[in-house]
Length: 452
Image: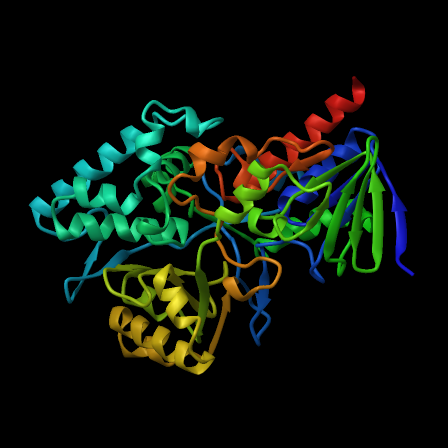
C-alpha cells in the first residue's frame, strides 16, 4: 500500500527550487510535502568524495557577484565560500599553438578587434530583451526564427571571433550555437548580466565555490525542512480536481490544495496529467531540451600547474576538452583539474566506453598542461545526459520558434499546478540563483492566493 500524505502544498523535486519553495511556504504557515525521485536532495548539485575524502563537485558549483538570492541563502545557512583559484597566467590553445596570458589572450589585433565588436554588438542586443517576456522584444520574431550560429556567421568576420562565440555557447549553454535560437541566447545572456559576467571567473559567474561542495546548500536546506522531504519517490501522475491536487508517486500519494512542479521542463513533460495539460504547455515541454555536458574531475598529488605559474584555467579551439578550471580544495591539496565536455563533444564521448572517454580527456589536458596532466592519481566524470532524473545540464535551451510560440506557457500556472525551476527564472536563468528565485516566486503566488 502506498503511503498517503495530506498537506497544503505538494512540491515535486528536491533541488534548490523545490527546497526553497518549501521553506518559504513553511515560513508562511503552510504544510508541505517535498517529493523527490532520487535517493538524495540537490537535483543538479552533486558532491563526490575522492578516495582521500576530498570533496569535488560533479554538478553546478559556482556563485558570483549579483547573485543576491544565493548570497543571502549562504548567509542564512551559515555556509562558507572561497574564491576559484586564479593566481598566475591562463592558457589558450589556439590555432595549434599554446600561449599564456593574464588579461588579454595573445591573438592578432585584427582578431581581438573582431571579437570585441561582435561581443559588444551581441551584448547590446541582449539588453533589449525583456526578461519577464522575451517574446515581446522588438525584433523577437526575427531573432527567434534564426539560430545563434546564423548570427555568428553574419556578424563575426574572422575565424577567431566565430570560434570564441562558439566556445561561449558551448561553455555557458552546454549546447552548440546551432542548437538554440538567437532570441534564447540573447535572453539568457541578459539574464546573467552579459557575456563577460557569464564567462569570467573574477567578477563573473565562476568567481566563488562552496567549502564542502555546492550540494551542502541543498543538504542544509533539507536538514531544516526535516521529514517533509521524501526521497526515492518518482512522481508518475498529477491529478487535479476543483479544490485539490493529487500527486501519485512510487510508494506515495500526496494531496494538497496546490502543487509546485520544480523539475526541468523535459522531465515535467514525462508526468501524466489528468486532465491533460493545455496544448501550449505540453508542446513547450516537447521542445525545450537540456544541454549536453560531461563533467570530469582529474586529481593529482599536487596542483603542479600552480608551480609553473598557471591558474589551471585554459580554453581551446579544439576538443574534446575546451574549458578547464582549477578545482582543488581550499587547502590546495590534492590538485584537481576540472575539465568539461560540452555540446557535440559530450554527445560523441557519451557514446564511447568510460576508458576511451578518460583517455580522450587526459590526452586533451596533456595538450594544454603537458605530460604530467596525463598521469592523474584519480579520475571521475559524470554524463548528465545519462542521469535518469536529469537528462542533461546545465539547463534547458530554446530552439528556434519556441520562445515566440510557447514562451507564455513557461511560468503560467495550470489550475492549481505551478512551475518552478532554474529554467523559469527571469534573472540568472539556469543558475542556482535563478532556481532560488523561482522557488520564492511560486511560494509567494500560492501564499497570496491562499490569503485571498
